[in-house]
Length: 109
Image (cartoon, one colour):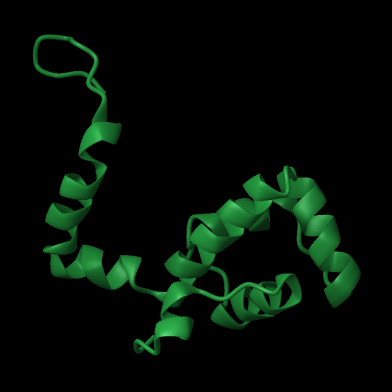
């Protein structure tokens, strides 16, 4: 991202500040607290930690669920896409042994 003068901005230094500002906007807060969004973050972290491609993760899940997920579905899930049923998120999370943050803290879904 560039500033008004064309200079490249490094927003990583301001991540927490930006996140806190965005969390004050009700619709953004609701979206980022959703089960799909939280699950997507966990899926992304898991895939990166395991050094898996979208396809490799889809194959791993398919082997355990006997389902037909593809790499596009995994990518959509990492973004918390609402077009994918929440039950599919729950199945994938369970198979991988993952929990979305609020499941551990008891916050409402």
